[in-house]
Each structure stands twice: as C-alpha cells, then as structure tokens.
Image (cartoon, rainbow, N blue to C red):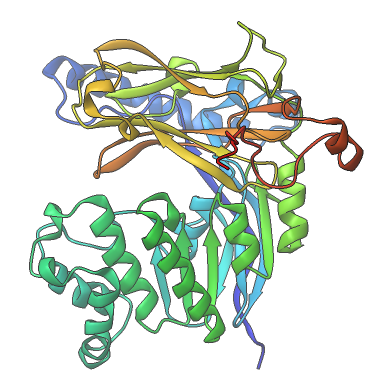
Length: 441
C-alpha cells in the first residue's frame, strides 16, 4: 500500500473579483429593473455560450483578464504529493494561494478544477473562529469540534484535560467562547486541533496571534506531533520556524507551485525573490489592506530626509511611516511592525502600545500618518524587511502582511582599524548596537 496520504492533481480555484452583489434587501425600483433586464441577460448568456465555440475568438481570449472578465485564479494547476509523517512548509507572499490551498484540503471550499485525495482524518487550524460556535462554552466546543473531526466521545474525554491544560484555560472553560480574547480563542483552537489524534494536521499561520510563550508551545507541540508520525502541512511567514520544523517545503507564487524540495533550499529561493529594495509601498483604495473601518494606504522607509533608494548608513536614524485611514474610531487600535532580516527571521516586533498610553499617537477619523524611528547604531549591516501590523488590542488582526518594503544597512559605526582587519563589512550577530563602556576601577 502506498504511503502517500495527500495527493493533489492539477488543482485550480477561481474567484470572482470586482463588483459583488450588495448584501441585504433590494428596493422596489431595483427589483423592477432586475426583472425587466432578466430576459435580455438570459439572451446575452446564450449568445455568449454560442460565441465561445467560435474559432474567431482567439483574439478575444488573448486579451488581459481585466478586459475579458472579472475573475482571478487563486490556484492554477497545483500538483504535489505528501507522504505519511512528512512535515511540509507552504510559503509564499500574500495572495500566493496558501490559505486557499488549505481551505480546499480541509473541504471548506470546493476546487474549480482538479482533484484532492486524502487518506486519514484531517484536523485544521486555519483562522481564529473556524470550527467553533461562539454561543457555546469552551468545554462544549471541544466536544463539538472533536465530533466534527470524527472522534467519538470517549476519545475526546481521554484528551480533554490535556487540551485544557495546554490552552491554560481551566478558569474559563465553561465560558462562552464569544467572550474569549483572540489569544484565548487561538490557544483553545490549537490545543484541540493538535491533541485530537487526526492523521493529518493543517495549520495556517498559528504564530500570528499569541504571546511569545504560547508561540513556543505551539512550535514544540507541532514538533511532537511530527515526531509521532502524523502528517503536518504548515503555512507560515516565519521562515526560521519553517526551516526548523519542516523537512520539505512548497513555494507558491500567483497560485502556482514554483519550487518544492528541501526546506532550506526553498526558503532561500523565496527570500532571493524579493528583488531590489522597495522602500515605498502604496495601495489604491480598492485594494488597500484592512477592512471597512481601517485601511493601510502606504508604508515607507527613509533616512536623511526622503532618501528613497533604500540603502542607508548605520549612523543614521531610520524612519518608517505608515499612512492609514480610519472611518470609525477604535480606542484599542494597535499599530506596529515586524522587522525581518534577510533570512526571514524576526529581529523584533514593535507597537505603539510599547509606550505608556499617554505617549501613544493620537488616532483620528480620516487620514493618519504615524512614524516609527529605529535609532542609529542599532542594526547590523545587511538587508531588512518591514511587515506592517494593525489590529485591535487582544481582539483581532486587521492588517497582517509580509515584508512589503525592504531596505539595506551599510555598517559605518564602531569600526576600528583592528575590527576592519577581521571583517570589513559587518559585525558578528544579528544587531550591532552602540553600548556604553566605562571603567569603574
């Protein structure tokens, strides 16, 4: 018998973009207009079907999709196999198709083309809220989710205490989960998915929510799951975690598989694809990250005024500006960023909430421009990426993006003649801070 537990063949998924039907009730006028248009729409649809068989449509088919229709392929002709016990990382930029792939594998959505073969029960942790009923308690949701995964009551009961202890929710397990913070929700969701004995575990960016200690527990549990012979597909923007946990990786770009193989080689290929420094990123209104209340419009990095070439000296302060619009005020708004090095490792995460509330920048309705300053003499020479983060404190993420702007630091501080003999460019280590030294004897 083959040891292949996941087999994906020519998998494609198409979504409609652009205008969408307005939710809610229609006015009488809209109903009358739609009724009058219906016969003509049916006629146009029939004519379109006939024309699609005509050999004279080759020129039309060659038009860009933006001129031809309003659909986009989130996945296109994706094929791969996963053996039992494999731990596979799935990486790629935002919009590459990673989450769509896991939703199809977990049977949340149907593919447009292609097929998926799965051998074994599948447990998934795709996003906060998936699989739980907000009106039920944590206790009830553990049993409900376990039943959805195909576990019987005895199996769930046997694991129940271990699940609750891992989630550290003993005091709140009888509380409806609608009253949980996002961190509490994630802890319980991950604990259920990881502890119930499914043969296949799908995990999508589990490190996006939760404190450092919880993230460490998650990685440790996934390593334990993997060593236990279960199959894991792990989507993450944390390249260090992917290389640590996964033997193999799959790189997606624009819905297609561009490379598979050893995780370190695939991560290296992914990081090399960032190209030249892009110190400014702007979004048009229709595609700006965020939601109806808050949208990120631009992010830029500069030093010495508006120096946009993306290469800066370590003796200069680095300025990062984020422009976002607020249509409804949020007192719990949390704005920040992750700084990544060239290996995709997080150097630090910073929020405005690191300061005292009295020092927080003012949030106003309309346009906001906030600036973060990385002090001179902190970063080592090398290439860095900035990942913008906007969320509601202890509730949910609104913006959580990959490295959308990049810059390079040229080390020119603290270099003595002795040091330049050893290394003419960088110091050892992740950062190169200027620290105070003094003699006390």
